[in-house]
Image (cartoon, rainbow, N blue to C red; front, side, top):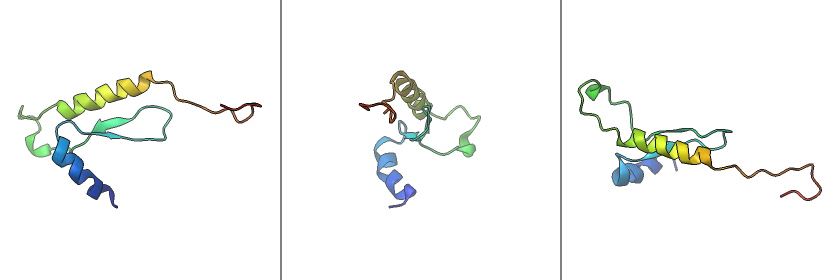
Length: 77
């Protein structure tokens, strides 16, 4: 499945609150799940919902301590 195919159901279900998350980084990285919408920029009609959801999720992810495994220890956990 391609990236765009997976986003179709998400955007149909939660267009204004969807969030992209980049995994595998040593820090939380989130972004709104929509395009730049240049055609409505500066008109005061854009909805901030997805941006707010992205910020809130980044805050929650930053609060969690990642589980790590010490491969040099006798009893890695």
